[in-house]
Each structure stands twice: as structure tokens, then as C-alpha cells.
Length: 297
Image 1 (tube, rainbow, N blue to C red):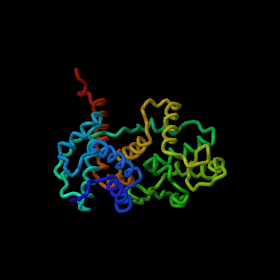
Image 2: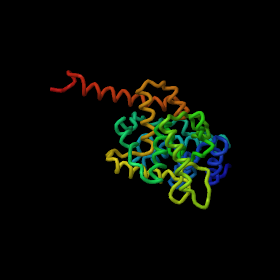
Image 3: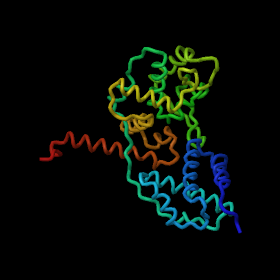
Image 4: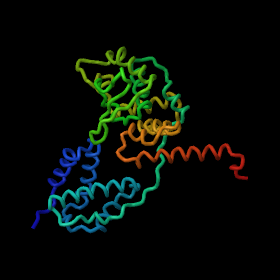
């Protein structure tokens, strides 16, 4: 008889997706958190004897989960069961017949052209202002994820050919061009202002905080939030909103969806297609505002 599924099985699974599947650190962390919740919920029970109803009860216990989060839980549990089946720790994967909840199309939030201009054209007075300016211009010019932005190193930037080399999800590398404006402020930051942020220790990361250490995702989020207050932008803006704005504005200006997919580092074109819904929503709004027969009497 097989031994009960243990915490070691979870650790072995996390090692597998890290070293064999080469999933990103953030993805592995989310898998770990979900499996921890799963393990705690069914502690004392033999998970080999669980039914689909048991799984549904577990997922339903998180009443505030939206369809996307529920689908993520299901994906994680299904992957874990596949791992156990492959290692002959269970006899069958009950998740194989699980029906995923339907997910509605969630239109990503993005900035208008005027809002982007307002955000990027803030006063430049301090060394931190020039660092922030370089980060924002590069982010809007390339659509980088915030994790990709803060981990950029000098070797990732090619000023001669105007592109940045990015290691994205799953350690997949891509090359993204940047424009003249982002190049101007990035070069200015590197040449004149970054040296003023360097302390005793030296780091290869491009963007440093006031302690001379690489700026974090949380640090950049705080900067962005403060900047929205300064520039009078009322929207709740996260770093990902700039990425959405980059993709949406490219599509609106005629860029091919496949090109946008490559620039964003999406492995599946269906992920990129969400931006076509954004454009359609914009067209609908413009129509309703402009067409003389669209006004309700």
C-alpha cells in the first residue's frame, strides 16, 4: 500500500516545476501558497480518497475568489495530481474530469494618451525624478513587466541598436526595441544620475533606490502611486496598467497582434487577444459619443 501523501510530495512537486518546467519564481510562489492552503484544508485526510465534491468544497470555502482565481486553484491542484500520478503515488487523477468555471472577459485597465502624457511629464528636480523618468519611459516604450524592469542589468541594454534583452516568464528571453525618448532618459540616468545613487556596495541592476540597492517591485509601486497623486491622475494605477497601455496603444495604431504577442512575451496568442476587446470597447464608446442617432431620447 502506498504511503499517505505528505508535505515532502509537495516539496518534490515544487522542485519539479522549478528545475524541470523552469517556471518563474513568482509562479512557483503562487503554486506553493495554493498547495499550502490545500494541504491545511485536508490535513488528516488521505487525499487519494478525495472526491470532486471535496475539491469543490475546498475551492468554495474561499467565497471571495473570482473565476480567474478559482481556475488557478484548479490548475495547481490538477498539476499536482498529474505529478503524483506520474510518480505512481496515486492511481488516477480525479481532476482530469473537473469542469473549469466559466470566466468572463476582463477588460484590462489602461491609460489614455493624455493620461500617459500627464504621467510622464512630471517635474524633474532630483536624482530620483530622473531615475523614475527613465523607468517610466522605458516601461511604456517596451511593455515590460515590473519584475522584468526592476531586474534589468547593464548587459541587458543595447544603446547602439536600441533594444533591451529581457528574461521573462519561464526564463524565456526576448528582445524588445525602445524609442528615442526612452533612450534619451535612460542614457541620461545611466551617465549622470545613477552614479549618484551608488553607495558602498555595487549592484549590476540598473535602477537603484536611495540606499543604493536595486529597487523592488513594491518600491516602484509606491513611486507610481505617489506620482499619480502629484500629476492629478485619479485612476488606481499599478505598474501593469502601463504594460496594458503599451499594448493597447500599439494595437490602436495598427500594430500586428502577433508582433505585440512577441513584444509582451506571451506564450499564447489568446492572452494577447484581450487587447482586441479593449479596442472594440473604445470604438463602441467613441461611436456612442459621436453618432447622432446613438443618443437615447
